[in-house]
Amino acid sequence: MGGSAGVPGQFSFVLHSHLPWLANHGRWPVGEEWLYQSWAASYLPVVEVLRRLADDGFRDQLSLGITPVLAAQLDDPHCCASMYEWLADWQLRACEAAVSTDPDRAESGHREFRAAAHALADFEVNWRHGASPVIRSLVSSGVIEVLGGPLAHPFQPLLDPRLRRFSLREGLNDARSRWGFDPSGIWAPECAFAPGMETEYARAGVGHFMVDGPTLHGDTALGRPVGDTEVVAFGRDLTVSYRVWSPKSGYPGHAAYRDFHTYDHTTGFKSFRVTGRNVPGDAKKPYDPALVDAVIDRHVDDFVETVARRLTDESSRIGAPALVVAAFDTELFGHWWFEGPIWLERVLRRLPEAGVTVGTLATARANGFVGDPMELPASSWGSGKDWRVWNGPQVEHLVTLNAEVTETALDTCEKLLAGGGGRNRVADQIVREALMTVSSDWPFMVSKDTAANYAVQRAHTHAHATREICDAAMRGRDAHAAELAAGWNRADNLFAGLDARRLLAAMREETGDAT
Image (cartoon, rainbow, N blue to C red; front, top):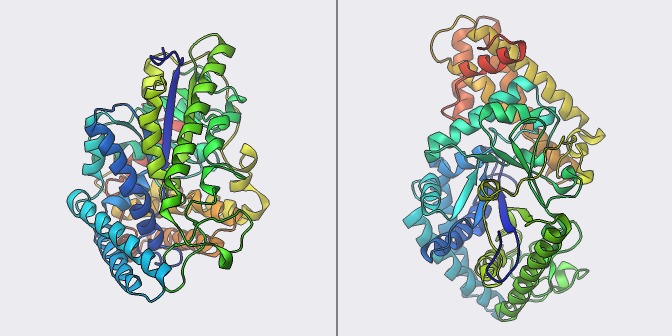
């Protein structure tokens, strides 16, 4: 198992695509703008890369994780219409910048106009009916494996097991309804794991999932079956992944690349280059595309050499062909690192030329890149590789809130659904709001101090929605509960297939009542 030039083993790219539900919850500086920026800067160009590779006969290039909550937004009619408007506004702003008397600003305007025109044309042809047709096309071409995940991206280890099981199964149901197939693997939110979750994965039909390298004690050269199940955990190789992006270094910090944090306050465009690691924003130099191409090529060559060397070294160490997995947020490519999509395409074309075999996690599992079973510790890919980002002292109030809201929601739904019967839209919305309350994004944003106030407000907004619907339902005010549920559903109109009746099965499973 290995490339034609003698590089043993397999290399796997894994990209994790996720944003919390942003529609109808603010616009700027945090809110829907975040979605449209990521869509334009990352999702459009990354899909274009994959489409070109597929057209050129490339297959099995990467495992693409798409969370149900992001998939819901990329299919949502409001989001699709607003995205089209956002792209048009981008082009109009570029027109204004292009006629500036400032030559650097005018040049930036011309670049942005061309980019906006290209994005608009791509969106009109391929995305106007949402992302699901796009994803199905990529899967049909064989260029990617899609990884699913639980609804609303909860931090699973801290979630009540009843809601955790339900969230996972509903997430897989959501994938089937959108894309017409069952993902064989998932991206576990935050790569978080607690012992025992492997059994839940096995029962849900999950074949493999991602963890961070330290979870496998740093030995990521093979996937590992977890416990006494056949569910395989694949670990992120930090030696290779951190070459691209790490807490302290990586390619995007090169002086010639476009700077993410500094923008022209007149146009709103990011028209400066990094210039230097400690250079203040007002001293950044204008972005110059002519300086970038050779830098990208150097970083492509460096990464390919790093992968080939790592595969050779790891294969020698274990005495068999090894696996190397590099995993990143999809939003790194384009949104955070403007040149990222170009780098990604060049790497995927260059790797086979260098004799490196590229494949998805599903292929790695099928081709036997799996070692001996292993018991996994409690872990995540966050700071310290433990759970501190999501249950540390700074977010203790959210941990308490999540527990209280979850218990209220589960108790209420159990009572509402106890008599059987048809679909209960009130119970559905209670579960929907509870799931958004416990999203892992809110404590992450607080712990990392990135729009912390927005995160706290969002958590409490969904908690309030859960509580007031539950209160009305438990007081027997059925009409009012239905009115509240319908009102909140207009704002949080996602996961139409969520059926709270299936929650009872997950709840009874814990007590052994389920058959």
